[in-house]
Amino acid sequence: MSHPDHATSAGRPPLRDVLLPFAASLACIGALYTGDLDTQLTARFFDEARGVWPFRDRGTWPTWIHRGVTDLVFLTALSALVVAVRQRFKRADPVLAARATLLVATIASTTLIVALLKSVSPDPSPWDATTFGGAITHGKLFQSSVPPGHTGHASPGAHASGVFALMALYYCWCEAHLTRARIALVAAWLAGSAAGVNQVLRGAHYPSHNYWSALLAWAIATTLYFTLFRGKLGARDTPR
Image (cartoon, rainbow, N blue to C red):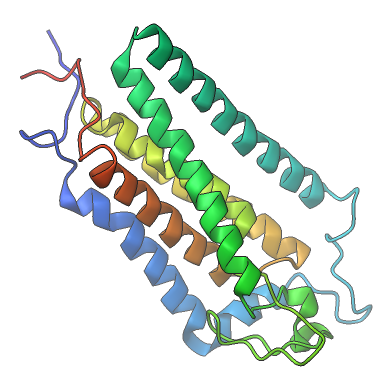
């Protein structure tokens, strides 16, 4: 009889799994900051001849994806909240309740913290950067130069952050189904990257903005798992 794979004998996720999203996101940021690759990649989607971002306007497929991803993340969080509340009131499945609570808490916390950071960030969207006809000189994280009368408020990337928050699914499953958890982790990181690329297409974000969001989302999920849940959601189907 086969058993679900599981983390360590103590039920804790392997350290290499915890470090992987940090390492991958930091590697991307480092590469993007090398030789201003951040701007070079973004410039591929700017129509210099017309001075416009072709995919910025409503009615283009990136705007549809933008709306769809936003709705998907919201519905995921709402569904997780309903499951968490229902299971706790009925006391039917405490493990499912804990998993749902971690997921909705990660999405909500990531959304809030990214929004707060954006509200004080000097970093511009590409469409507001001097390179593309705007007024703000884009720099590394929180190092952009903003002239009087203008605002940045574009970093970290909010749109991708909600998708990156789904990396919390790793912690939802790692105690009982490590392979499933790892697949969810990689899938969420790749999906967040794809959502970020969609924003780069529109001229809304530089690529680096999105990987700072990935770092934040994973840090929040990890912090919640090891503090709020003390590194253990309870895995009733894990063999002992």
